Amino acid sequence: MLLLIPGPVTTRPEVRAAMAQDVAPWDNDTRAFYSALKARVLAIAGGREPEYAALPLQGCGHFATEAAIRSFVPAGGRLLVPLTGHYAERMVRLAREAGREVTEVPVSETEPVSPADLAAALAADPASSHVGLVYSETSSGVIHDVAALGAVVRAAGRRLLVDGVSAFGALPLEVSAQPELDAVWFSSNKCLEGLPGVTFTIVRADRLAGAAGGAGSWSFDLADTYANHLRASGVFRFTPPAQILSALAVALDLFDAEGGQPARLARYRANADTLCRSMRAIGLSPTLPADVQGPIIVNIDAPDDPAWALQGFVDRLKARGFLISNFANTAHPSFRVGCIGAVEPRDMCAFAAAVDSALDDMGVRSRAPLRHAA
Image 1 (tube, helix red, strand yellow):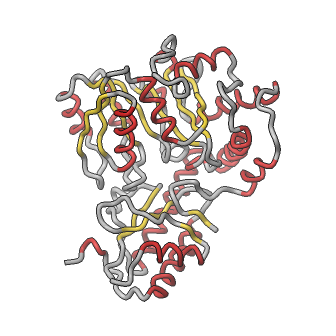
Image 2: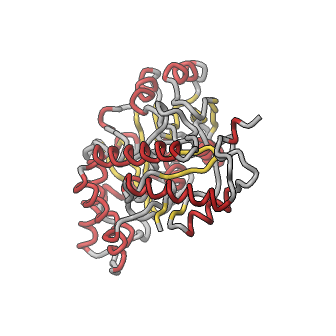
Image 3: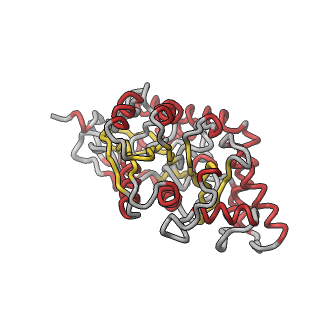
């Protein structure tokens, strides 16, 4: 079964096999292993100690989002968030429930955030200390230019927080070239092709030094996590997901062997290009135009046919060896396909054949996009 979803992604057998051994998290050998693992992910982000640190946190990407907001935006402070899609909306909710104010900036869900529009929004909102940006918006498939938007944030004298959950490891990032960037966070899963269960946040160390206690949460306090990092780099504050970290180490070995971030991005782009081309060949339409479509997630317009039903379609694909999301986040009916994980362009060709067969099995005759229906 291939998982063609935004995550958890399909993983290599070697990664899954690394979970088979019990690990004592407080053993001295394990401490050295943790320290080395943090150094590896920090290097992928283009950062070096002591200016930067990689801080692990047990849990999913939303945990890291909340931790970053709580740790960097002062209590009662304000965060400006371009509403790029579903995950930006979640950032807004997490901020408000943490007692932070939010300025929402409406943007098109089918286009990258405009630097000029962000500059205008910041000029109109002097109270916001930070901008919260989703790098790869998995609801739409659009990629937002973190470097260009970060330059706008820097020019305005503000700070930047980046959700890199479905971007890190594939899309380019060089934290040392973006001094306005307080934090970027990501999962052990997604583009690193490990297993889910732990996040890392790459932080500007000087922004956290001596700030422990301001998060209003012990579990989500990155300043306290950083203080613990300085005291004992190889020790988690709380029980770590030890086997998940073992699997991540193997996934990083495979990442390096493939050629690192540029090679992974090239494979994902080839996956997305093959998928879009194959969908068009069987009469279906990708939602985004080619010049906007990112390499992580592709939305395909649902066919304008009364026989179409997303769950029935998903069930038929599952019977053919492919699992996709059974929900859509687009404004019009669609289905979403992940191009990340341990999959290749040939898998996308096989998937297209399965889609063709599944639609025939459902009795779908018209494959014209439903969003264009009269």
